[in-house]
Picture 1: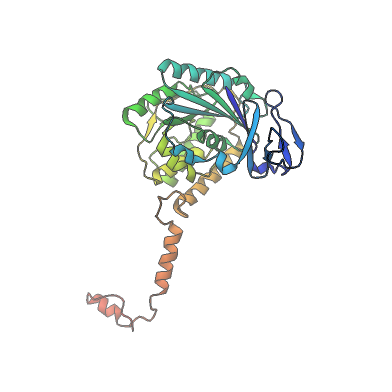
Picture 2: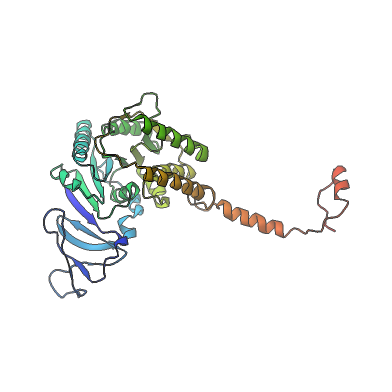
Length: 363
């Protein structure tokens, strides 16, 4: 298992703070020092500036990269690694022991199927040390640690940017979804190569042990999504999906949501980009092993984000294919065109209309 640690740009780390090699598991030591000069010594320590991320591999700090490099979706356009058919990102926030159970089950299921795979577990600013439970999880497992909690979407962005597989997916770490479903989804993907295969809890073969309140919230939200977007997708939010690599490369740069609305935004952007072969598959939802991160505040934030996505889709053309114009641009052009029409209209227009001649006659 390898380990990467990211300091987000929003931390505002001073320009002269030097990050030294990690001291012990999951820790680092920073001292204040002047900027190192090239060639001044055998080791050049990276300087962490605001707008940069510090990355550590194998316990040794390496040169920080800009945030847009760390979350650079354009790397998905590179050819997939021949030995990796599937990359699975596992975002997590304080899941406790459920994380190791989920990853162990995922690794065992994919090994048994003979799938070439990698697992990228991304800590979204955990405070319970959950990432350390993955020590010894296997050579296929990598850990990325976001030092600040930013949301599920941010964790997925960080994981997807490092994916090497032909198919790239994710599964929630909380224990309510059996990661073995990904084996079934890979089989579906191999058969018809759709743009995506996603868990659909409304599928006739699905089952759910979720609470009545959680089911009610899900139904209300899916109804809202249907009314606003008409996606033809009954369940956007269940946390188990796989995407074709080229589809994710085309769509991910357009996505802005960093929290739970990431899933919805992906489907909206994919449909707008012309990817319609999105396949729903059965899923079995168990009782949640870790505490839920879906609070009343998270629900309100999700609803607000949904309307923001609606605005991006229908008003400013955020997800429109290259070369097309957003509605606001077209409306401005229409208004400009109307303003150029002469306002003095001949009185006999009405009579000419009755006679079947043109409506507008300029005086």
